[in-house]
Length: 316
Image (cartoon, rainbow, N blue to C red; front, top):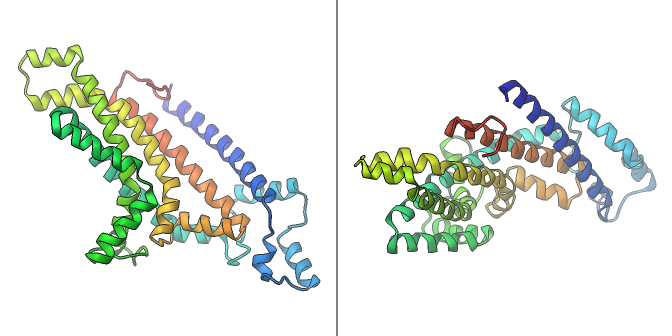
């Protein structure tokens, strides 16, 4: 498959996924109990004139299919509408928060890739007590909920030791990086445990292959055998898991951002759901789904880089 064909195929898939997702989110929000009017006019409501004005402004009394088609047409023109709670353009609200979420996910992805592959490789090559200890710690990390890890990290490193800030995303640059260290660790620990176990299994399997035994018999340096003959071939399943893990971080950031009071897309999504701020929920979900699909497309491309025998767009 050529690069142009692959790109068109992925683009078509992305459009279809976003279309189905937007319809489902639209449907579920309007089927949920409650009304956004209570957040606009307050718990006591307003006068009939106020209710009529707000309803007409946000087209709340229009049929579902008309609201959906109108919103979809606006999205195609880059307009996600206006928040009914904050009275701001949704695009502006997302622009001010997406950078924080992207940085959080990026830091977590780097931590997962380095620590997961590193610990898994050491566990496979060392074996014995070292391998058993690493595997046990990986199981503990994998089984511990993210919010529990977050609270524990805050209690130890932010409150007790005062090494990191308790909450917030900082003022930019190094300060933002300093604020996001603990959230990134909390977000990545479970995934590190999972990737560690997958890496150990993949490396163990590759070590028993005939070509590795041949390389050992030829007395090739150990570093060459590990790098070229073991890790290179073990990277396919590792990359698959890593890609899915990084994609799942986009959803996992919702929990972490709320635990650490980070002003990102995750915390914005939770607030919008609780306030039934339809326009914000729909826009944030579409952005998160877009990121998920893009990450999986990148993984497909990485397959061909790792192993040229794999055709572009074809799963190994």
